[in-house]
Amino acid sequence: MLLNRVVEYVFFFGLMGIVGYLLWQMMSPFITALALAAVIVTISYPIYGKVLAYTPKRNPTAAALISTFLVIIVFVLPLFWITSMLVSEAISIYRILDGNQFSLSDTLNDFENVLQNLIPGLQIDLANYMQQGAQWFAGNLGAIFVGTASTLFSFFIAVFGCFYFFRDGEKFTNKLIEISPLADMEDGLILRRMGSAVRGVATGTVLVAIIQGVSAAIGFSVFGFDRAILFGVIVAITALVPGVGPSVVFVPAAIYSFVFGDYVTGIGLLVWFLVAVSFLDNILGPYLVSRSHPMHPFLILLSVLGGLALFGPIGFVVGPVITSVFIVLLEIYSQHVANADGRV
Image (cartoon, rainbow, N blue to C red):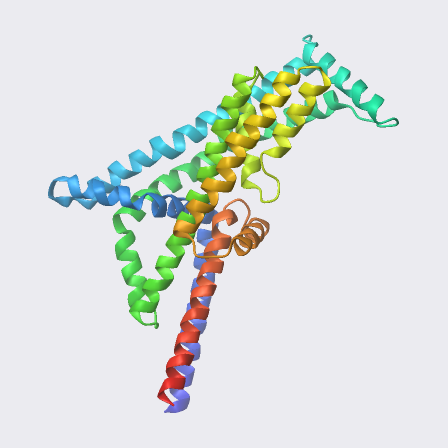
């Protein structure tokens, strides 16, 4: 009898493992899009709750449809607009360097001469590097974010994912709690920590990076730099990279201004960077993270870097989520040990 039960368990879990593996293989092309949808829904779920409250008869389908439409307006359309602007700017730079408009190329050559006078023996071709970078940027970024069928397909998967996560997300989480062998209170703790990790990274890092990018674009525009939007987007991207930050954009721009005798612009950029951009990073960032994320900042840094290395861009959020879940499991384990010691 016992042997039959063991055989049943082995067969059942073996079959479940095979089916689960095949299911993963089928779903793996959509994981990134679904993970992005889950992150967006986690951030904006309070909006769905408010929309649902004002929907006639509290219709979840209508509320999910409206919330998904709002997500497209708030998240997706600005992303496509910024991407198209980046591609346009990159193509413009490439044409300037590759065509008959030599003003920027001549300026870069003058800058190279100044650097070579300051550092004898320095061999550098900024115009060539910039041309190659702009060429790659225009070709690859446009293909990745705008022109490919796979990106559009992933976009539609993410949109449908948002709709169903809004409408059926609560049922899905309740089903997970029902299936889980852990106590409902412990399942709820894990889910809350996962949500706080997503919201903490989004509000404390991504939001600050976006605000820094906007502030940088305003600063570059105020001090007369062309392509301020391009520089603003680059600042936002560098702000997302731990240990890099907007200084890699502002400091070279200020040095460039000083080298060519525009001291007012150079000093203005440095002051703008220290007052407007760094203030946002050092004051607003930790405040937003600490409000919704209980992890230590250094642990967040390691989680982000590890997530990026293992999962790619979506690992920026997945890494801290995994770390948060592990910490919760340790807390649950320690609580079980404490309860066991108390019973003894």
